[in-house]
Length: 508
Image (tube, rainbow, N blue to C red; front, top):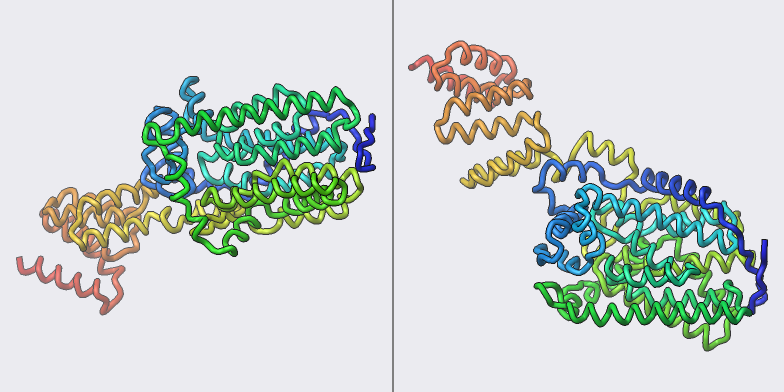
């Protein structure tokens, strides 16, 4: 193992990295994170059956993304997601390669594994041991970028993190420049993160990457200038496209942000939820810079850090996604703290365990969504609530029937039955709609289906009996009215209606 003496008086070991171990660790951390911070699989599954659920936040961007996959240059219609217009890397390549929608929607998950692998690889390459690197990956992985990439379909934050990490920590100019070419077309926030990524890279050249080697320093400078030039080139191109094909212009985008109109407390909540315990590593990097670098350099680097934090907090309403721009700097904090003996496992392991144990949440300017563990999600799938509950859609359909909007009621019943094909209440309301149109056969069939699926509801049997009577089907009427009488509580409203129907039938 080779060691390098650098100008802060610390020693940073360089090690050969066992790639197989890194891949295994990344896969295990990914699986553990998915269990503890589960995607809302029940919502994804419901949306695949019920397109009307496409307005829920967990899948709304995916609707626009799949439209973009089909027609990459067509204006994005959803006003909330018009910013996707020029984030063309994945939908554009997917369109050219005829990638199936499911594959495109799975790419953020692939990116999450790659991002975790990059965190582990760069940490171990720069001297961090396997257990400490895993803890660092937990602290930086159990955060907003991972939650958005896996919890909300169509968010490519994981690949944005990959691009930022390679820009700041890869040694090969090819990887750095490729990241700078592709990164902005994943998400324009790459440009906001670029100054801090390059500042991190420059600090690495002073502390980790052979600061006494003139050839190494010259190559580092070339890489940084090339990366900066690519960033400027993208800005020129992107501003020339702003407002084109009905896409958002810069001024219009900024004017839509609510971040300027919310309190500091909300911003702090978003920052805390976004980076969670990764802030410990950000703070470690800042403190070590302050203690080891000349004042002008320290002030400059801290200034870039503060500017990135402020700009990222204001540029988007998804507050908990914004701090992911600090990951390259936080990773350097882990490396520097480890080199100085300030990141022992006695600190990292408890922090990592707490990071995995504490609940997480998405924080947006105007709402907060909890992130559940997998068992909770599975229970929610078995016992749907809210917009995923068929009975809630039936209830709204009943209200629409009362308002006289039968077409809307029918649409709500369709949604209810796609959510739960065995929802007897939906068939009962369908039967009532047919009854209002005096369509007795469809009314009878729907009431009969309602009774078959929900046999303990006396009103359903009463309705079936009435439809059977209208059809002149005496055996069916007799069976249905008998079952209604058996189930109806004495002196109840249903019992009164049953008696009234029997009187009407007898009178005829």
